[in-house]
Structures are given as structure tokens and as C-alpha cells.
Image 1 (cartoon, one colour):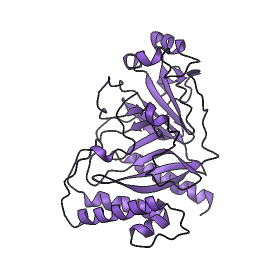
Image 2: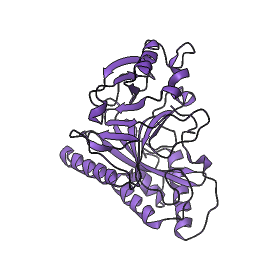
Image 3: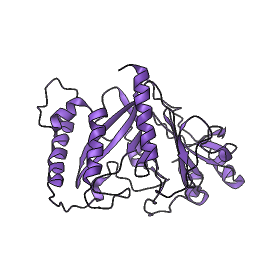
Image 4: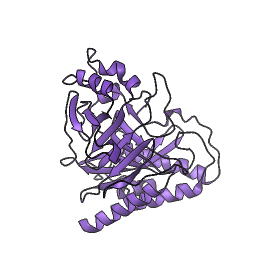
Length: 321
């Protein structure tokens, strides 16, 4: 496949996913992620530039197609069955962001998804992640003063005043990667709050300390780093992870994506093939593919599986930022 055809195919994939309100999006790294989703009847505003995406009153997504952008469709085995997604990956030598390790003022956010936010001040939280810069943005003078008081210090330094005030300030969260950005405008939930039904972010210090770019259960090919993700509608749960009646059409739709963008070796194993010794996929991922195939067969035969969905989150998301 030539790069130009690849770019056209990737652009078509992104446009189709953006047009579907049942598809959610993520951008980030293991332990720090921003999620964008919208309701079917939610008012959507087009971006004021050539990027792919949209804005709502609760958040925005803006994406740029690159010739080296590789979608990787995959399924992972979880307690109740499986999760699925399409990771948007870049080569590991082309995905790096700023790698700042302290809170840093970046100035006006000239590339904000909405024109009205382009004079607000952007601050990098200094999480030192490979493929994402986790930032916040505000035009409120008191919030700007608080954020400036923490500049030059690590976010999680106990002497940094930002952490104690972040929920009260609730600045916009802006996560940046080489493939684009996700912005979240909704207020930050307080301690112990659940994930809101809409755009939101998660920052989990314990997971950040691992230094991983993605969960070990996610079968990303060697040499590639996931920067963002497409999360099509799931066959047996809604966007909040709540159980719904099994939807065979949703299942079939993702299998089409898996055929087009999945790892051929992993697909072969899922369909009953042997895990070859020279295969690029790990034994762990091969075993998970077989398990997913078995569970999906049960669903397709109409057998009801009663299981809790609490263990479905690959990253153990619990806290918010």
C-alpha cells in the first residue's frame, strides 16, 4: 500500500468514526488519558480550520492525518468478555512530544479547537510522557495566578499549590499528541466522583510511574506507539460500561475493522490457527485472542453470560484530573 493510499484510507476511517455519535475517542498514555464522546442529539460545531474533528459545549477533538499514522484494530480479553478499539499509532521514533517534567506556561493556545479559546493560557502539567503533553487552559485571572505559582515544579510535588486547587479551578484539560488533541471543558469531578457522562480525563499517578505507553494487554506491534484511540460502539455495553442486550450488528461492524486494520497473525490465531514460533505476536496476546473468540461464539449463539463489568477497564481508571 502506497503512503498516499494509506492516508486516504486512514482519513476515510477517521471521518466515518467522527460521524458516528456512538463512537468514543481517547488520546493519551497509560495513566493519563482524555476521552471525547457526544450524545446523538448534542449540538456540534465544526472546527475553524482544516483538521478533522468537532467541538461541543463539553469538549472537542481535532485530528491531523499523517503519512506515518497507522490504525491498529484489536480486541482484549476482560472478565466479562472483551473490549475493542482501534489504536492510532505512530512509529516510536516519530511520536515524541515535549517530555517536560515540571509545570510550564506555554502562552496562548493558538491551536485551540474553538476560536474563542485561542487567547486562553495553556500550561503543560509536566508529566514527562513520551507521546502526549497533558495540559490545562484558562483565561480566569485567579486560575492563571495559581497555575503560575506552580510553574517550575513537578505537579505531584506536595509543595506545588496546583494540585490542591485543580478541582476548584476546573480549567479546560487539553491533551496534545502528534496526531491531534482532545479538549475537555466539563468540570472536574470531586474526590470519589464517578466518570461523567461525556468528555473527561483521567490522571493516575500510580500508573504513570510504570512509564508504559499502553497496557500490557493491548497488542500493539513492536516499534509503534498508540497516541489516540477510536472506540466504536460495543456489542454488550454502552459508553459508560453498563450492560445492554447483545447487538450482533455492532459486533459485525467491528469485525470489519478488525479484518482491515488488525494484526493478520493475531487474526489467524483467533480463527483457530496455530501460534507460530516465529510470529511477532506474544503468547499472552495469542491466548487472549483465543479466549475472545470463545466468548464471542457464546454470545453469537445466544447464550447469556452474567458477569460484572467492573474489571473491564484495562487501566484501572478511578481518579480524575
